[in-house]
Length: 116
Image 1 (cartoon, rainbow, N blue to C red):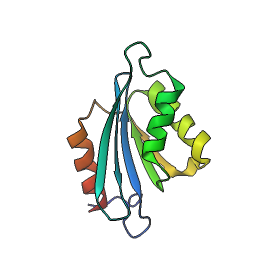
Image 2: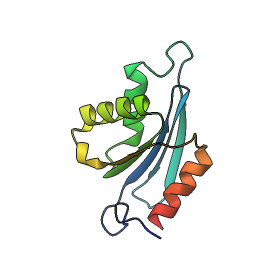
Image 3: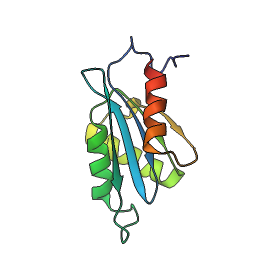
Image 4: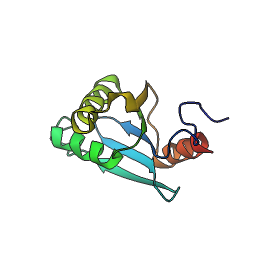
């Protein structure tokens, strides 16, 4: 079942992100209709609080038209603010969910199901 928010006929580029104090996992669609993913570990001394880590994650998300951010509330909020400060498009954050930690493979599979 395809979500209306992630309807493939409505937009082309989507991203799903898991972020916590240890890492960020970004999965996104490409213009070639494939999915790429990457894991960004946070430096142990920074524990995910360095704005440069968030800027890197936001840059990896890129100028997607719809972004789903998952993880603990404080990290989700921090990433959402960073994304909006860079791209100036708060309406692209379609949902912010609480979730248990997800692996890179689980995030890619979730994105694959949403765009199917």
